Image 1 (cartoon, helix red, strand yellow):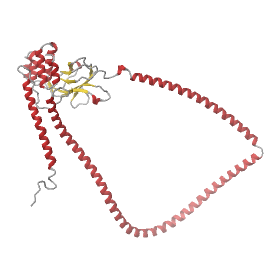
Image 2: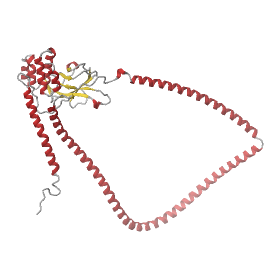
Image 3: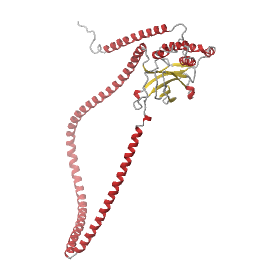
Image 4: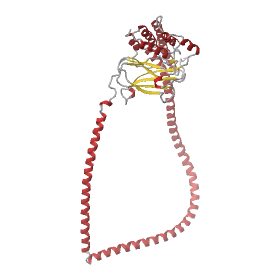
Length: 436
């Protein structure tokens, strides 16, 4: 007896499921291996005495974006795999549902219409012919005879009398009037002409010719005036076009005079970073000068209108810069996620060419115990505690403030190198390493 590995009608459906399972397994294995390598590299890079950042939520969604290359290969691989899996699953489900619904509706409608028309025509013709012939003959004969006789007699008498009287009167009157008028006018004209009225007709003709010549001269004068006005309007239009062209080519209005830097990145953690302050300071890095203005936008998650939207001058050199929300009267709500953007717009009419970086932040009030402990920590060690407790923005701002006050202190700068390296900001790390 011959057996089949995949029975007909059910075995083939397992092949796509098996392929999807194998693809998922292949994708998951490299991501876990890369994550282990990253953890090992991070632990090796943190030496004794360096601050250690503990993310508040392990393995959370990556929310930071940079304009340009941050210089971290392993992070790019892991991020690419994770984003590829998440986007592939979401897009596969959405596209599968949309295509399934659209195809189902289109096929259902087309098949329903074709079958309905074919069956309707065939059944309608067959039933219509059979029933029509049988019922039509019987009903037609009986109803035709009775209705024809009764309606013919009544309508014939009534319509004959009414139409005969009305048509006779109307035609008699109309023909009498038309013939009398036409004959009277023709005979009167012929007799008047023959009796010598030709002189008066000649005088009338001369007067009409003089009036016509006067109107023609007036029309010529009006045409000349219209031509002069048109030439003046064209001259004014040419001046306006020249003025508009000069405004369009105004060099002071040109955008994008400076070159775009190779990197612009928020000094933020990969995941949503926490802060103990309702009006924090945001730090960001740019790799070179930028003569354009930079757009800054702060959005509350789930709200359409931005909390803050402004332009800041482009820096004249490479470095780390700040945006103090307190100076703009912006206060964050507790336990609400916000996303902030720094954007260079080289082509205002083509926003897909924007050069941008973004990150997320959340204001999380510290506990009473943590607040008491932080109050007893000296300023030069405060960023250690912030980093250990998962408050990234406070740690990097406190440390950056100390560096601004003592730019020659290599220890402080090496500590910022350690923090930035832990959140995979490789090119920003290179900037600080050059200062050591």
